[in-house]
Image (spheres, rainbow, N blue to C red):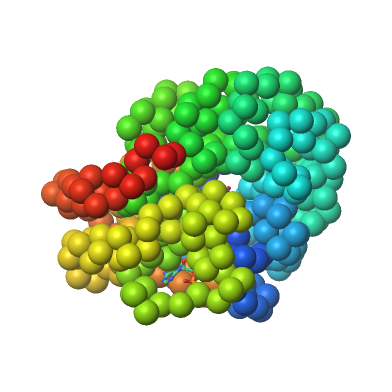
Length: 327
Ligand SMILES: NC(=O)c1ccc[n+]([C@@H]2O[C@H](COP(=O)([O-])OP(=O)(O)OC[C@H]3O[C@@H](n4cnc5c(N)ncnc54)[C@H](OP(=O)(O)O)[C@@H]3O)[C@@H](O)[C@H]2O)c1
């Protein structure tokens, strides 16, 4: 496993880290013992950074991460998120009182007295024009409840605005072979300001592992079934917002590029790691086998320039017309 510096936090984190949404909920039936095996395997593979949120199973994901920390000797940096417990997303909901309450709950779930990194969890765009909210986070850092804060965003423009606030140390954004726009302008700006970047949904919710086809079915409490058209939350979070059948077609084109000895999931992650501005990819994983596969991406050689160009061409031809200007 290779490590990269997470912006100005001072943390050195595994370039393939762990996304802990699926082990909380919204991904069908996932058993806690499988999740713990996956978490332990991640640590064995050198993962030292986990992304979770208070709403992933309403504390379930955070509590599993806390259990891992108790059972492991390694130092594990944990990023959590706050804001999605609001019944509806309003800027007013990000009040000092609400933020303090959510942080207290995460502290309890994670069994700690100070959170390593708290990210605002895809708040409305208007929040980035309300500096007082960042002031509340500064105050939580001053009193020692949080070490660092950052944001998780839906749109590139939100990311660009967020990093104008000097204490926003990280930005989490969707970036994968089906979502290239963050690399156009945002990466360069983030690098200049030494802001860490967490690449989320790196496997396009599993599509980029190449395991799905037209006959694949998802259970009703899996967001790949219930949020395919944005019924519950932003549709970009499910399959990266790409129409399922269009995506399958593009996956077949990408599959032709995967070198021998590399799985398609590893290819998708290695592609992300080719961008220096990215600190880490945070693939979700439900089993130890998936985690081993994903972590293997860090050990692989660089992809060729021709391969990178071909992925960009597949994106430009098949995917960009559907998604490029949406996020
Ligand atoms: N708003 C936000 O801030 C937000 C939103 C989304 C995600 N996130 C974060 O980003 C992380 C990653 O995104 P994601 O979990 O949505 O999507 P993802 O990483 O693109 O896909 C994860 C899913 O793909 C499948 N998978 C993973 N590795 C595999 C492998 N090697 N082989 C085959 N299948 C594999 C698993 O599901 P199956 O086995 O069921 O196919 C897994 O749950 C999340 O866990 C979360 O921490 C944050």
